[in-house]
Image (cartoon, rainbow, N blue to C red; front, side):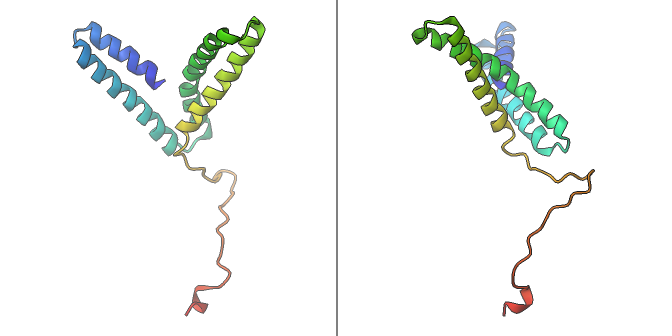
Length: 132
C-alpha cells in the first residue's frame, strides 16, 4: 500500500506542476508516512480486529501485485495456464503474508483484559533476600 500511495500522490504532484524532482520527493515522503502511520497504528492498537483490518488494508495490494508479478514470471517457464495461476496464487499468499508480517513486527501481544487473563510473571528460584 505505501508504494501505491507514493505512486498515486507522486503522479498527482507531477501532473499539478511539481516537476520530476518535487513529485519524486513528495511521493517518497507520502509512501514513508503511510508505512510509518500503519506501523504506529498497529503497534498502539489494543483491538485485535483493528489490527487485522489495518494489516488487511496493507496486505491486499501486496497480494494483488504479488499475483501479477508471479503470474508474469511464470509465463517464462510454465506452459500450462492452470499451473501459472496456481503459482501466482501461492506467490500472492507468500507476498501478502510477508507484508502483514513486516507491518506487525513492532506490535506487542497483550493479554486479554476482557477475559480476565493475566500475564504469568516468572518468579526467581531464589528470593532477592538470599542473594547477599
